[in-house]
Image (cartoon, rainbow, N blue to C red; front, side, top):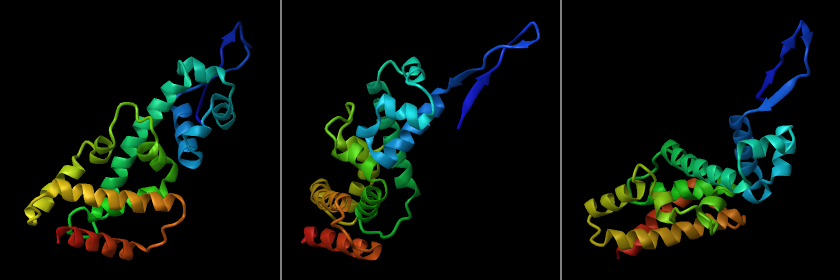
Length: 196
């Protein structure tokens, strides 16, 4: 627990301890709650309990809960991009690595997946913008498809995306039980099928 504790001395006597909860500590606690429970469970009262403080520091740091939720959303976007960048590359077929990463993210980070890709409030960010990220991952996949002879790579992305998104959503309900190699083969087969 990260708390800054200030003790003042006056005339050699200890004054009452004053504890100050930091913004970083509150935010990290809230992000942990988001990953474990989902955004809908992050209320001022629940965050205060988890952080071991009253609600006063929360509203001293954040003007309202929406301000905190927006920051959590932005952190979630960054987290997805880091997750994508950390994921090993499994296959050279266009859209397979992106698909595997997206499906794994839904499986391993279900609450973040829901917030980023299934919620209605994305704080002004479009689904494509989140998925593409700062590194242009979707754009790279479209260019790879073109380089591999796919004449309508943009349409191919849409077909693959619908397929990938459906599989990822199935993981959130426990209806997806394919192993990683089976997922890779399924995505490769879908790509080849859509080419025909």
